[in-house]
Picture 1 (cartoon, rainbow, N blue to C red):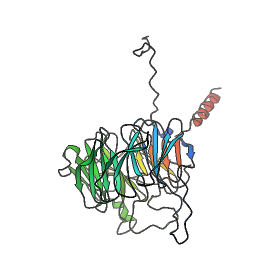
Picture 2: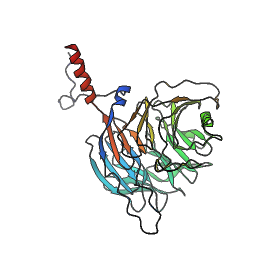
Picture 3: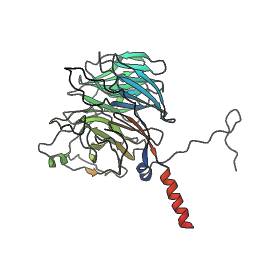
Picture 4: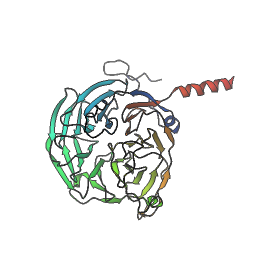
Length: 401
């Protein structure tokens, strides 16, 4: 038997951390392990003559650091709140009352983030969580930033704004290094290699794929997002409003988050519409009793859906507070010319989890741990319930007796 591995100082090396493969059984056992009631400041009382408030304030965005150790929230109360994923404790609260805060994104250092502003101007800010200071300002947008993503491989990041532009940036320089003009407000996403990025253009239902090294050239693929099943509900069909894009870990698929009652999965190589994810209530409305508008809108968060790190499952929030999980391991295979009239496979949830108080507006799976974070008016950490396993073991032992 070989000796245990040792470190350079002669001590026995620690064993590698145990990894748990995600499975249908594990995903159905996720339960809220901790709920933070004070994750958002309560709405101040309305003043006489002022417009009435639309209900409680909500968390609008969440982000994990690369190691999955920490999660940061941004909320309508103009605060960042930092939490430890391993201890389940609130670490600190930072305020951005002057500029507001939205779309925080950890850089590749666990102490710094970039974030969008909601007041004063449309500058993107590079912020140190360690000493609560701004390290850099990225000016250029003339409208609110609605999409912000950090490159998975370097210090680059990308922003989309209601000024109908996408800007490419580098943390080391305050001026943008690339600019794309578009016909409508865009949303952006990098693939896992950082070599390709996607731009979703609402009102035109187009997703444009660019080579990062040749972003000034035409997109190498233009995908039309058209769902023929919507015409079975109403005619003309209600438009799809895209709120987020994200590539699967193997870069084969694009998950299109939408504000309505369906999300979509597309083939990233040719643009075929493969699956329609159903079973949740769309988050474009503020409250579940509010009437639906004729034209779709974003809602107050665009982070209601995401992949698990292995891209075997998709998790989503819902206006009724449920957490929805779909098994996407057996997506259909399509090739050849894209047929916009071909119906997508309609996927129903693997499981629907209860326990989130109020609308679950932001839902993210931890990049390293078997953990979901959901957010709305409150914040919840979800972990697999191991007690169910103990019950099964006890039953098995009783059977053997």
